[in-house]
Figure (cartoon, rainbow, N blue to C red):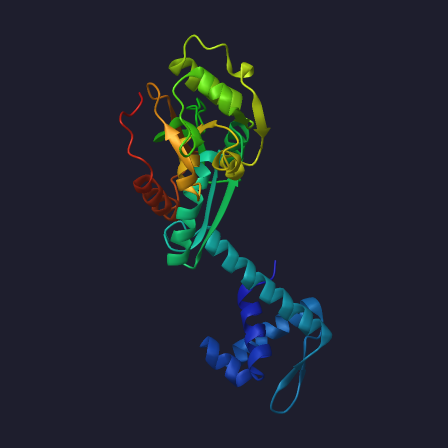
Length: 296
């Protein structure tokens, strides 16, 4: 391994042009700088051409200088990655279901605008992928609807996710036939969510599969677009509805008791959260809907 002090002496000489300025910048003697360069030349061959008032790098010297610059760059990246003591720089990485992600991601972008040295990496993913990503250290923070039982994960209650029946603005919906007349806008979790909600509100209903399906879309941010155009109703978490831009074109109906899923924050149990992650969480928690009851 190359002696770091020798490399610093060589880089100072290469960048400042002569031994006097290099030695002054390092608070060393000219003799020390010269000795360090000689040690490197014994290992790598001639690195400089000595002129009366300056030095010139040989091809090997240019290669070694690039190597030194790469080391310095890698050290800066390492320090940035390990800057857990800083809450205003480094990467905030979060992985979650898309419904709550629609609400959380813009909040993290607001934080990044306040702290330009922060970067946000966010991924929408199904539950299994969220667990695997946090366990494999691909993301620092994850959010899942089921509390995991894994020794390497901490799980904390994060927020309640309320299911909502969302219809076009102005639509009159009170009975099961009203839903049949509207038709269902389906999505990857549509049948499961609609079954959970509608079985509570209409216990004697013939099932979601009996409803006419007026469309299917797998992009969470677009599910409410056909609803806003009057093409049908759907069932989604409240976070997804709140993130929709055209609130005036839709309505959330209350036809029965609330159906709630608790959401759990997960992160690795073996080490503490970085300060930047803690700062992000304080922003996200205060912006999420206050739960009516914290699950056990």
